[in-house]
Length: 377
Image (cartoon, rainbow, N blue to C red):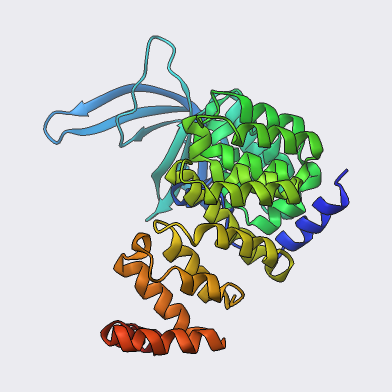
């Protein structure tokens, strides 16, 4: 059962509708087996035999000996041996099972996609196909059960289903997720690194105090293992969801620490942006503390200043302007960001700052003003 704080967080996060935030773009754009099945006219299960090349054209061919039709069309004409125009290696004397997806073009079958087809894949695909009209929580409950499948095709496809799901749908399906399963997947060194952040976000949606401690322990390792560093943003989001006070304090500390890996700090900033977009005013105070932690650091100050400007957060105007003359903030991109912030900020100190910079570096102010006018068009 969710704690009250976690329940409030989930309601706020449910407003998001984009694909899962903590999945890579290359993952969340992949079509799933369920999608391939829905689009195909014919889906056949069988075995691959006789892979070969045409020496004249260098084209590959492999025979599919179909043993079952998971989805059929008259265009197949009862054929049980079909030639796939691909070279699909067959190893040993026992060819692997295979599931092939076909479209129909000009009344003929056209191979579009295929995957290894042991019994586990076929059973999974049949179950997934029945979910086409089901609501998101029901679909995700089904795919959650397969995230830890021993079959790599099944586990990978179930993960992509979550990668393609919106944050809101993930939150709605949280009651169907098992924290123990997620902790096991996150701790398993064999779990692909790209999945850790998503699993941590799921854990944040369904876990409790013990899970917060688990994520905290993963995040506070020194040095950070590569797989944790690469998934830092999702792990951090899960921690903040489960333990807001400690999670936000840790986030600000990471952002303020030059000793942290650059990638971890950048991921932490991404997590701050996620919560700002998801919760808005509810987490503004924590977001401001995180931005304040970044302002003194020349390598990140421009990003924090621009975020504050985009969000219309003018509370830190004095701190922003105080960075302008520092040698650590002399990079043109940082100076331009601070001036752009000042030209947008309605505070009195912003007007004084602009007037002062206009006296010492009028060209800089004019350049930024011109840029702002371009964006306004």
